[in-house]
Length: 427
Image 1 (cartoon, helix red, strand yellow):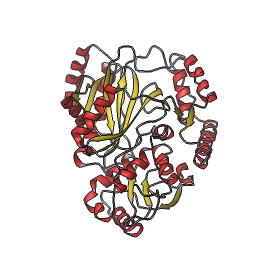
Image 2 (tube, helix red, strand yellow):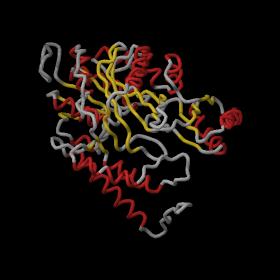
Image 3 (tube, helix red, strand yellow):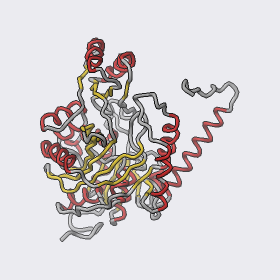
Image 4 (spheres, helix red, strand yellow):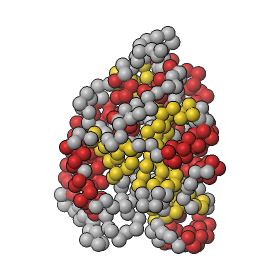
């Protein structure tokens, strides 16, 4: 028998500290835990973040930003843990996760932190090591090679050209460097040897670059909660709207678990004796049935609102696993539910409409299929990532902030001497 959510039982405060700022994973974690009666505190969340308007946040704490050369953030963090005695500390993104992973030995004596095991963190935070693990356990990956120094760029280009297939995808070995948690290193897609040489010259300054054959198909995520390598909960979504040039989805659908993809995810987490949440991302070609691993997100993921809305309450399940020791969880979830990030999807609609059909790097959705998605709204099968009836203020704040940015851009564009808008070459 599990204790009631939020109940202050022996050794527990009923309070959780959530770290982050976005209106997707961070806000979903806040809402999930708050709805269960837990007292949610937050930190490392900028004052202007719309997520701070959530009714489920009891208190926001001001902790100095991480600085490798200044330990004031660490002293403030330890003081907060000692004072509030949180049941659990949950980092929701890489900039809040990395400092805790690097300083876990100094922080863990003062509170329970949700952190990955050292091997799991090393592998999931490195795209190179993720691919090596996949090959070791028999999970398909795209054909690839690794560029490690600028001097070898010509050699890399020659080998890629021998594949006789462009575009190719360039991946930095990690998305963030601990020396700069404010700048994300993005994956790039290139269509020619000249673009490949230029991109390698820029990206290699931050470390090795993974050069992969472009995997065709739709993005599919298998999300899971695992304990010591055993999968306790699993959920699957299909990306419906992906940026034409690649990136996170703005519209997605819950689908039934694919046994082959679930088995691949199980093999990966079993090899790492993984404990925690993860999203294992694949590319699946519906025409051929072929699929390949893209990456493992060793943290909460951007499409988390869909999973929670469909009944797979990963944030609360994680709390129950780590704090209460629970290992049995509901297996089912609602299939056929859609979730949309309206602001991101507006940008996607513009990019999709403008995408050239002749550019092999771009993934484009026909406009008739986009129009047909209105049925999902009319049949109540669609949810918003941000707007929910029990907590509407973050969505309203997000819309207001977007409107202010739009007005500001138009005001700047109307000033004398402002640059003329760029014209597409194929317009």
